[in-house]
Amino acid sequence: MRKLVDKTLVVASHNAGKIREIRDLIGPLGFEAKSAADLNFVEPDETGTTFEENARIKALASARASGLPALSDDSGLAVDALDGAPGVYTANWAEREDGSRDFAMAMEKVEKALREKGATTPESRAARFVSVLCLAWPDGHVELFRGEVEGHVVWPPRGTSGFGYDPVFQPKGYKTTFGEMSAEEKHGWKPGDAKALSHRARAFKLFAETCLGA
Image (cartoon, rainbow, N blue to C red):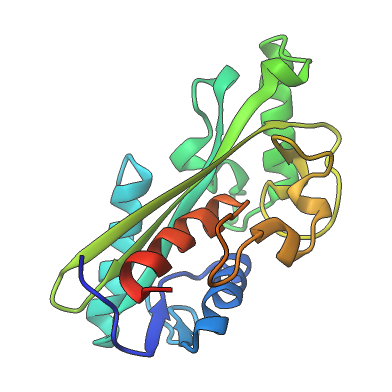
């Protein structure tokens, strides 16, 4: 595993919510994080069929464009009753014809699909959030870290915190959705902690322990 020495890196994303969460997680470690959006980088086509492939595509694009290490996240909601959908196409389910993204519409699509399957109980609506972080260097070297959190899909959506599908995901062992949690509650991790709650925090914990020694 290659250690990250630079204290400046690029968050390889144009998703404001994702950029905010990654900055929240990496900030306490003393890093300056620029984003691909801030730097006006063109978004690469995410042609992969796995979270790992898409994370790699995004991180390498920003690392090569900036000459700095870049950290990307590819994440999504995988619902058992829907054979793992929306999965790597989580963001696509939110796309409108004009190219904008509407996650209220996306959550309704998930709910409609579950009802069509007759999945009405928490047990039949099991799901997990998956996050794969990719740290890439300009020379092409990459490190990958995967985090998952189990739970189930609820309806109607609850809470206005977080972003994406957070209001319909209730993690196992909790009575609140990610949309009802503060950022601190959702992540459940900071440097030195043994536990992490969210998928992104779990992947980030592995990244921090492996590449930063945190």
